[in-house]
Amino acid sequence: MARFLRPLLRGTTYTRLLHLWVPMLVVSVWMFIDTSTPWVPAAVLLAVGLIPAVRLGEGVQARLLLTPGEPASESAISIAPSASWRDRLRTVLWLEVRMALGAVAMGASVWLPLTSVDLLRAASGHFSDGSPFLPASQPQWVYALLVPLPLLVFYGVLVGLGELITLLAGRLLGPSPTERLAALEERTEQLLERNRIARELHDSIGHALTVAVVQAGAARAAGDPAFTDRALDAIEETGRAALEDLERVLGVLRESGRPASTRPALTEADRLLESARSSGAKVDMEVTGPLDDVPGPVSREGYRILQESLTNVLRHAGAVPVRVRIGVAADTLALEVRNPLAAAIPGPGRGSGLRGIRERAALLGGRARTGPDKGDWQVHVELPLR
Image 1 (spheres, rainbow, N blue to C red):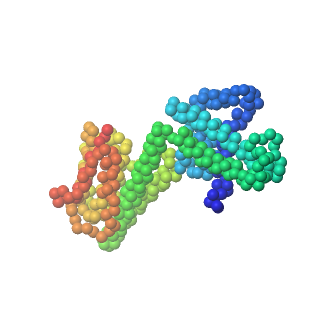
Image 2 (image 1 turned 30 degrees about the vertical axis):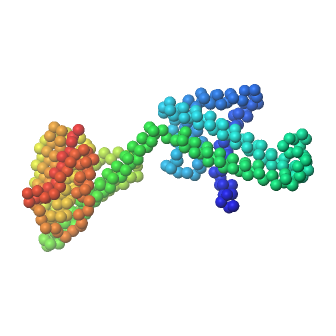
């Protein structure tokens, strides 16, 4: 019984009833003007529903009264103007259906409670004159038993129409295929942005920590004050750059509309090489072609790939010779990092660096090869420029 009566305790039940009553206000006003043409309001809605802004207003009203408290991200009701004739026709159908169900709800709200009152009067001996439905010939106790019946019917109509109008709102005012596609694209962009930020943090902070660990270990082993000073300078510079990257990424997280246009590009690769050299690696770089002509997205991803490659060298091979080759052709950027294979050195685990390199290359439609090659460890990446 408690479960049966639970809808009576929910505010949503009454806001849905109010939503059904609203169109009847217009009908009531018109009936004061001309009772012979009750169909006029429904005919007017055929033209009103074609106005794009009407769908927006109906969506806002439906969310407020049919699904109060439901998060906007989970709502099946759209709050956007009509963008196509399909949306306009759906809005017209919604207005007509809403008026029809409103008429049923209004009739039930008036006549069913009055019927219970008449039954109660008949049970007490007060019969309406000439009523064919409540003849005085029937025993009064029969009418007393029937008093709750109209109220139960009214309760069922009240809850049932509320559920029905909410279901229809999701179907007729729900997102169109175009809106669903736009929402899917927006969600995809958000996920890609989160993945990009995760890679940014992994590359930048991972590189800084790797350099700091290698520099600290080398300074302790060297026992040379001058080398220690240089190592501390390198740790400070790398840490400062990592803090700048971290602050920028946090800024992007705080301001979702802010473009991340300040990411470093391949034209700033010298700072990566100096950081690796200060850690003891002997880096030899050769550049062919104009780096300034590389498109921004390709240049920025190339920088991160080079950063991750050098980080992997320092992390897994230590202070070894490294050959970096960057070639810019008519339609391809080729980036290669090679270092001699060496036994694993103590330090952080492998992590997801190689996977991140392959993901970055694939994101731009390029390809990446990583692994042993002629006694060296090789990272070879080709990125299309167009």
